[in-house]
Length: 491
Image 1: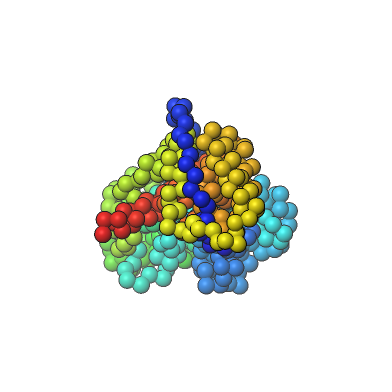
Image 2 (image 1 turned 45 degrees about the vertical axis):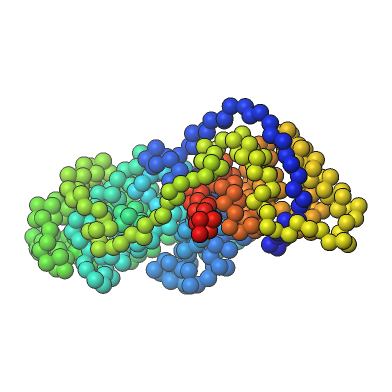
């Protein structure tokens, strides 16, 4: 369908008495996060992820290993304007699609403020894709090894050690004790500048995937001997992260341990810090790194010990963005929602029905409403009768008949109506079909691109689907167009 303008004739729609408002159900989100902050895990269609990445354009590759890497990460934008990171595996990585989906779904159940949370996957044909939250402020590798304006501050290095320990502890508590290839590329920074651990490393090793893609000099000894990753291997890798934070360089653990045994602590510390760190804190982190890098796995501490060791070092209360010298683009939230917008936030379908009933087709006034002489046929009369029957069914809350008549009307009209799509969308919601409701609400936006009601109805459908963050984006867009319309009226 193209972009439509309505030619429907305005028919009066009588009001009806309303039952008490419905209560909004509590969404099931991780307790560590604010409600609605992270959308529920879902299976994406390949066509949606292909569109989100402009056909997997090389211009949208964000993984530092580059386009020729077997597993590439893209920046993507979903149809509801949410930015995401999309990891595309090589065709041989996961030959069994069901195994891939099962593993991804397990990781997708985790929700934690120190993780880059996994929000979806796709396994169609040869494609295996993971979808995660997008982190706009680069990786630890970039900030530590490739900085331009200022070296990575000591206070942020301590914060990374603490936050990543928190992430590993949470994963361990949730029985996800294995993390593959923990390194400085796996630590990313969110919009607030806070470090988070990528959820991609929680995926089980695949057929051709390697648990450790870095140089063998940084690989846990037991992995070299057996090819297996155990929980203690993750502790060893955490020790290499501590070495990176201390030295500002990616130095082999064996070389670092030689320096430690020789008491050459100053040679280990990052010279770009110019002594701007606490000696006691540095000594404690060096001691912890030494414990984590023990050759025998049984001699290494567990995650709880690590967390208890680094927690007291986290003394700086300054925001991460400030410490890193970054700026955050403020998110403009709507200052005021209309009555319809507020009803959508409450997910009060009955109130939404009442509002749509009272507004009728007024929002499409100004569109062409006159039918040409040639169009006055029996078919047009049938169309008007079908619209009338749909409106009566909608008024009487006979939603199944409303859907049936509005569906007939859409197929009959050469220029469909945004109002009809919105009414059918609400009817779909009333009968428990939010996916079809979202489709109709999006089509209403096609008809009337700046119509707040279309955005509010998308928000309502997205909320029903558990996509709270996307729903908030739609509410923001609807409120923006509402404000724009009000400003035009005032001028």
